[in-house]
Length: 312
Ligand code: CP
Ligand code: NVA
Image (cartoon, rainbow, N blue to C red; front, side, top):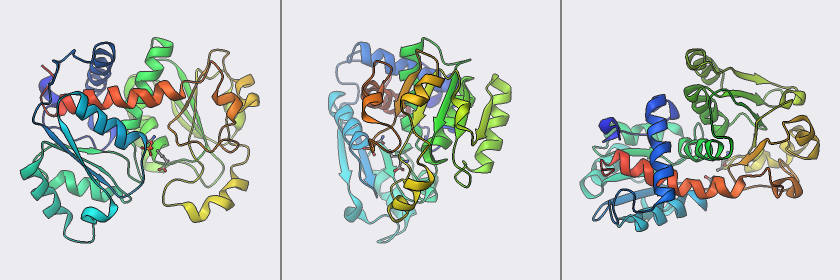
């Protein structure tokens, strides 16, 4: 197990090299196969602070349950508890929390907030979703694809929908592990151009083509199909208008006809059935939605074990 991850932050998928991502995935599979793979209570007396500016089911429960299962403890700090960005400086929050806990995770609106926490904290900081990235999600996604397909490198993945935080982290993750990624969006909703540039550069070193296109026919032959909500947390006011703009950018029976017969369907959840994915398609054998949700638990257990240096 590489000791290089001890003490490290995970703000962007790109913070970890390909080898480091594979190390997390291997540890995630190990704890999934045997929850005592790193000892019965490897995080005994360790505490995780969980800062949330936004709602959560999967992220909050999987991190908290994961800490409990490993003998540690998690403290939930909701939007009104510490008022990140309002009550005191982010620097002071990071410095104070660092005196109490072993790892900090944060779900924020502005990506700068999680970067500022990481810059000032003296313990590892994990991005549990920002407006720009969702790196923990992508660890679970890669684990799920690896389980279903037995490989990552060389697969063709297609993401259909909004060029959002999840799309950005998928582009970085795919680029790192050599998986081709096509982001298919309506015009005007493309992923960030700098993310595309960087992911393409990283991909050129690993053999991954990272593209952003508009044609729905680009799902032809896809091994992995991924979608996410059309309006992310914080974009609620745009939700109605986006319904019309995104109407065709969905996973349904038509999408499945174009894709490979064994294409794996992924959605980070929460889902809006009838919008970005139809319910029937989400319940076909191709769907890995709930394996993916489960893998949040295993991937994040591995992540916390490795960054806190408790993986041996
Ligand atoms: N996928 C995901 O992060 O879910 P939550 O918003 O429920 O945490
Ligand atoms: N893009 C979504 C992901 C939710 C897990 C959002 O930010 O709301």
